Image (cartoon, rainbow, N blue to C red):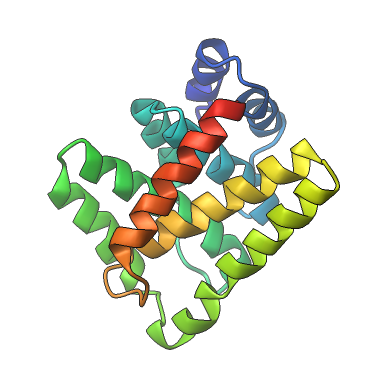
Length: 182
């Protein structure tokens, strides 16, 4: 697998979280490891937040050979990265390509599980609050990135049962807050 894009991202983006993810990806990237794919997904989210859309798409494309195999732990990371890519494609006016990404994902989504999934946003907000009480900037950032990743996921799934306008406003606010910390 050609990881030259990760070297390029590391050269162009000095932010700590980007450097950490690039280092971990360059050290080891197994497309069978949910941890390794999680590093790529977090990198994609951070690059999205930094408005480095081309790099986010290219980083996401490292996962193009990953197909659903029944392992939802692994697959959820892939889905989240691809849905960030879908959001970026919409932002840059490539609606048809964005819809194709979502269509491929919808084949493996189960809308009956969505009500349980949306509850994770409340849990993430609680974790962020607890991290603030502990004054743990690292934990705050980690939970905010996960929260942003999941909000993007829910906003990109067409019939996910949350108010898309409100969700998109929250994504924008959270991205601005995270960007200010990077």
